[in-house]
Image (cartoon, rainbow, N blue to C red; front, side, top):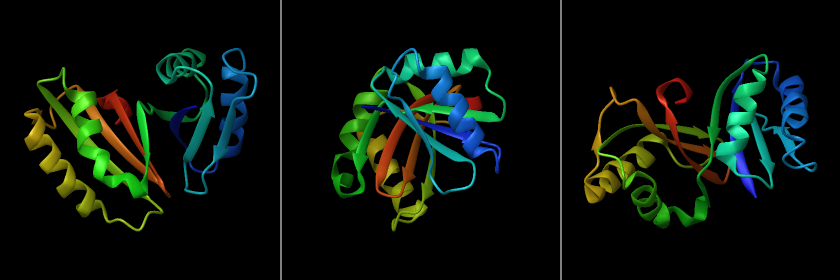
Length: 155
C-alpha cells in the first residue's frame, strides 16, 4: 500500500480528494483519497508506485493542489527507533539535502523530531543545507510517519 500526502488550499480538501481519485483510478480502481481532518491535508492510498502516482497527479494539474509528497517509506509512531536507518537508506546517494518536519496531531514535539534527525544526519555523513534542491521531508500525521524526498517546491 502506497501513501501520498497532498497539501491543498484550505477548504478545498473534499473536492481535491475526489479529483485525486479520478486521476489515479487507472492505476488502482480502489484508490482512496481522504481529508485527514487537518486543514489543507489530504492522504491518498492505493496499490501503486507512489513516485509514478505523484507524476500522474502532477500531469493532471489538479486545481488547488499545492504540494505533492509521495511517501517512500512509512512507520508507525511506535517505531521511532527505526527512523535513522530509514533516513540512511533514503539519503545514502546524496551529498547534501535540506530537510523539513511537519507534525500534525502527534504527541511528539517538532523539536524532539528535529533533534533526532540531526543525530541521524551525523551518522549518515550527509550534509544538511537549506539551499539544496532536494529535501527530505518527514510528515507525521497522527500515528503515521512518512518520509519523502522531494524538490524544494514540494517541501
